[in-house]
Amino acid sequence: MIKWAEPTYLWFLLILPVAVALVVVAAVLKHRRLRRQLEPRLVPGLTPDLSRGLAILRSLLLVGSLAFLLVAAARPKWGEKLQLYKGRGIDVVIALDGSKSMLAQDVKPNRLARAKTGLAALIDGLGGNAVAVTAFAGDCYVMCPLTTDIDAAKLFLDIIDPDMMPVPGTDFGRAIDVSMSLFNPKEKNHKALVMVTDGDDLGKNTSQAVQRAAEAGVRIFPVAMSTLEGAPIPQYDEQGNLKSYKKDKEGRIVMSRMNERQLILIARATQGRFLRVEGFSAERLIAELDKMRKKEIGGSTYAEYVERYQMFLIIALVFFLVGMFLSNRKRGWWPKSLFGLVLVCGLFGTAQADVPGLMRRGNSLYARGKFDQALETYQQAEVLEPDATAIHFNLGNTLYRLGKYPEAVSELELVLTDRSVKRRADAMYNMGNTVFKAGQLDAAIKAYTSALVMNSLDRQAKENLEFCLKKKEELEQQPDSSQQQNQQQPQPQQDQMDRGQAERVLQALEGKEKEEQKKARRPKSKRKVEKDW
Image 1 (cartoon, rainbow, N blue to C red):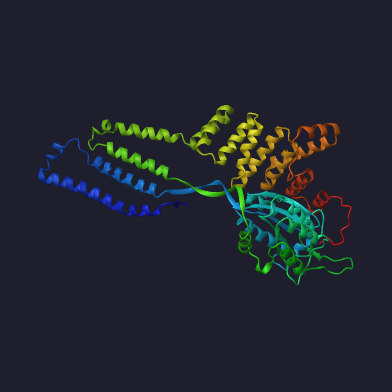
Image 2 (image 1 turned 135 degrees about the vertical axis):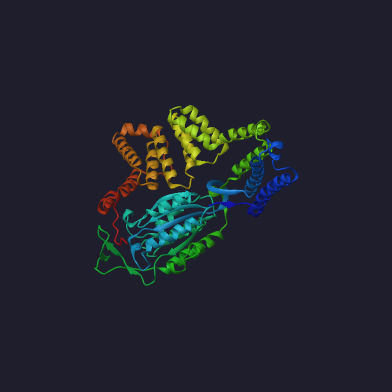
């Protein structure tokens, strides 16, 4: 799709057909006038070198030059590229209830599916803000820490499911406490917690957690994805067919209902807003969040159409120069236009030294194993377009080949701002290779896991992840070697995935049967859960 920054200039193109017609008519009238003034048989002898075709061509070139000049003045744009900017926004943590009761169907198609659809629209509208995602049931788990990459947040939102929750039940207090840990404790504003649940709380410490949130300046926005009437909780077999409904220990069917009063009190205690499913919309919640005091947030991205007027301007200049130096004589047009043709060749020679040309040259050098020269060529392209993720991707790969691992990671991290999920997945895979070569096993596990979340069909990433997990298990079985390894590796960050989390994602991507997933994912818990919905 082409966009025009100054479309007004395009109206002047309407006069060009008239100009072309006038050029042709003027040439014909001039020839007729000459034939009337002289004997027709004498005209060829008196003007042997004149070429009517060259004269018309010269005029048409000048008209064409004007046409392309008008197009360039209208500034056509197409093709998107990401721009980084520092904006003002807030920190938003989205806590999604992943308990079994979220499969109830009083909200169609079910509570969880409806919640994901609404939250996806919400995240799309939160550009410029920092967004995090947590999932909770009987316990709460950080799926995605605070980030300005809203596409990444949506990816983690999609994988939340009751089957992946190790501790069953629903504990609001735990969800609030874990979600609060993602905020900066030194800030007293700019913090919002959107808690999407069916309102069936089985925890015992919710009031204390709400009090802590209020004291920390966290505003909670509960969203109830259920109805006051409630609905039974369906249970499915391995083929996804309904086999029964959840029953309590007395054998009665459990009816999951919204506790509206509790959700209203949570919202009021923290100066938030409570929304029911009937009145919930992404636009309404975004409007409420926009009322909050904002802070400086960096690293956000926006798509900008690329200016393409340059090529039209070059063509206009070429047409003008050729038309100016083109003679209307059959054997005398080349010497007079020589200077113009030299300028034209110079222009085309300059045009070859553009980013695509440099990228092609760098790719050729990389394929031949000349990594030092390829690095220099990519760096020249980077000077022309410093925000092009394709250039940073190639720079990262080349630095990896040269053994410059920290520099390679820095370049590949810039690729994670790309809009293409596949490009981000490839960058994350390459980052895994790089940090593994650097001896950072935990960082490699995290990178391969993230690459698989973005692209579950990446077979090589899956094999590399399995190798790293096996390597880590071997190191853990050797205390001395493990201790030495831990001393050499940097400490994992707070949001880093541990081995158990990576294995759960890997098993989910392999598509194993649900019973095998439950056995692999569910940790042994000492505390007994009486109500597991």
